[in-house]
Length: 449
Image (cartoon, rainbow, N blue to C red; front, side, top):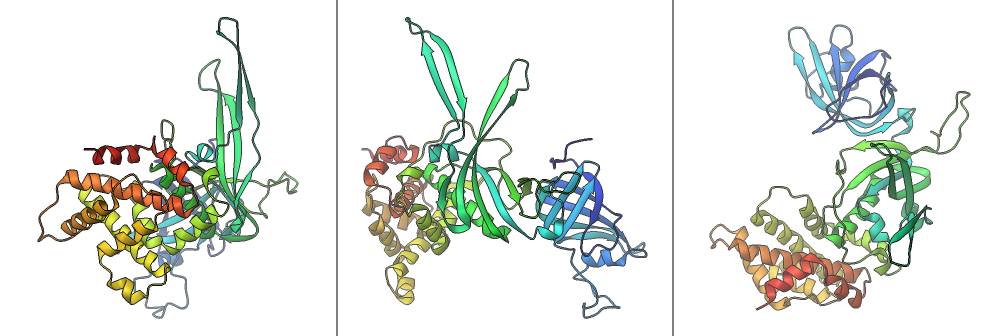
């Protein structure tokens, strides 16, 4: 028997069941594709017309013109099972179908938001009690490690012994919302080669509550934590894995008795999970210990209240194959929204804030920075305004790519300094970290005579 996994480009043929599926022998094909998690369902109008209706929301039905007698969408929660095990499919929705109008035979496509491997009952998984996410660089940012190493050397300084100890440090509660915390863990096993042992440190962001909450409530918090690490490092640090748990789905023995919590592996396309982790060390402009006591709380509120300014800028890290013009336009959109929202926050009326120029809004950002970035603010405001208007308006002279690149990186640095100050990071800490921050050093080089 193969492992109960969901691998790219490998289909699993099995049976669907659950509330809203009258036929327990309903055959389906489950696969993980570049476009998401999908289930292909064959149907025949003469034997099972109800399945055809799942994918016929845009079709007029003579026997149900008002569409009140039957269901015209697949169930949101579906159980899948084959010889390799069970998978709960949550957040199911129609993604269209292919049909032969003569034979009335077709194939419907169900999109799946979450696939929970090994979970036992789909009807329970519209919400969850707990969610875990592994994020690249989290251990470094938290300054947590399960591995401690002690060396001893001889009189000539040659290494004699290495003592390695694996012991997970205590969990760190970072926010009261959904009891958000960071959980250290580790694994060790034989390696893929003879005489090899592999140690893997794991660091999870965990949200866990007694009363189950929606997937979105959990996931949004985890995305905010990932975005904070991205902002601090200005690298595309990704999720590495997700797991979920429910209080009513524990580990069970053959007698049906429950024996403790189980964290089931989750596949989802709602986040970007890296197939291969990033290489090399990560430098941060600030770490968890540099934040004020309310730093995480401030970030979560800021991420929500100023999303129209923050999201376009952080999402630049996911921009692939884009030109410097498109990147500059996007950061300009973020800065413009951010300057407007800062004005509103400071008591300016919506009308007056709306009437401010782009240049005024950049000035709002600069005035709100608590730690002076290593660049000229007046020059940044002037040049960014000119370049942004040149990128937006085709009737103006096209800007030089070199000018766009340099001012793009100035804008990224200023944005990161603004966030750091809002989160309570001291000027001393920021300036010390800026000495090895690649963006800060690049801007210093741009500004040097």
